[in-house]
Length: 226
View (tube, rainbow, N blue to C red):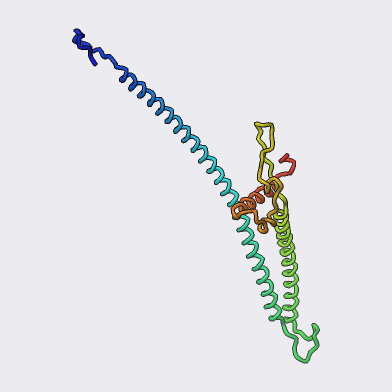
């Protein structure tokens, strides 16, 4: 408020009451509080961005694992189709060739002397062809059986392997942190379905954890994990 006794016309002096000062202080306090809230909001936004990045990286990792599993599943489907085709086609060919073999004329002995030259040539050719087919099929079966056996052994070994986890905090001189009993003592995939203490979602996590640990174990030498 301008002083009434002020003679100068080119300026206005204000004097503040104690109430006005308190209002100014409150306003200044509110401004500081607003700044603090704004800073906290900015920090919260930054933390949320970090959390988003973490889950995005985790999702990318899961997608990568999913892609690898899909690749294995697709390969298995292809091998299964090849097996079925190999089995059906070879048995069908052999059966058709057997049915198309030259018959021995009635009233003659079953020797080469009772078969004319053309039939004898066809029979010899078919026998050689069958022999080649059987040998090739045998080799294919042996290779496929070896591959299936190796994959089956891998999966069985993974499912019966006991997986345990130990968590440590490097900032506390690798002091072991408390962890759930099932992780500390270890779990076996084949025993999860019979466990009443494991929920469905936990079973899914543990199955994925088993796959990840075992895959890393197979891809890298054990001493690289030490």
